Image (spheres, rainbow, N blue to C red):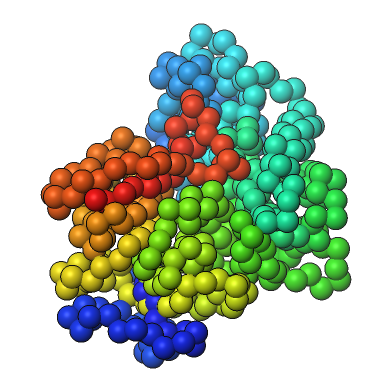
Length: 466
């Protein structure tokens, strides 16, 4: 979770009310942080059920799995597989060379298409075509054509000079399950999130297609494996150890990119996800349009919302629990000297800070809530909803009449209706009349496929609290 901002050498910091002192630490005076920040527990992979030995190169899925595919989804869970070829059955804990592609049939023998296969994931099959692909070469050709199409669809984002960063490939939403590609200036970051993609051939096709499609817009292509996925999917140990391609003899993995006319630092070896939250690009601009007065950005990470708010507000306080993130946010502030607001950073736990300041009567004109995903699984939804309600209730208490609340959820297990309902419940409990100004989602470079609800994970509500 993220923390609060304090003086950053941009001028004297006006003190908050004495009774509003938080448990946070200033960036300048923080003590050494304790090691071992809490991480979510690793989810163990359930052992696969007993499977029948099936025809070579063919996976047979249950009626439930077949219906899911026919409705337009692309996932088949391990529990919905009735039979696998002998070389695809890998004992729990073992490592083996399993086929990367399997034809998918229903129990009547009707072909449903071709899927990428992972012997380790609970999502064992990811459909890449409703046709039966005859060879790996056919799949690699499909990979190249879809990757090129995905990049072409994002080209309008780069027509001006205000933005040179975007998600180029969004996995299932672009018909390429398990593949993420992000562009930060001339540095491109690739993530392979499935064992079936963990091959030299796939890396070559991805690299060559990116170079051909982007031309001089790319100077370095790096692979950045997700550590948890690397372990669960048993990806190659050397994945990401060297750039996939570089125009320079000594590739630079740090750069500066632009979003909506603002500049941000990027380090391919640090930060969350692939390094930044590109999905909020359009929501940053929307928040800036409505923001005014004194603003608070809770869970600011590297200052994305805070710096956008600083274009229209008189003062912005950004809060995050990560000292390292706030150091990057301060560096990002230095890249944008034209911003009109006084910007301060504070390191603190978001829940503690909101509780302290709401009880002390601290007020703001604009508040942004952008916490990490509270619900990593369906079992966590109930607790997540309690967390969202608490944060939004505290924020509403802190807003002056006519204030703006921009509240976000990136938990895909929490639906848009559930999120809006819990925010409405918070408004009722605090006795504020709250008007919906905009209901938003992820930026257009993170497209939503209606038959794959997991692609619609980000919810953003822009509210006026009267």
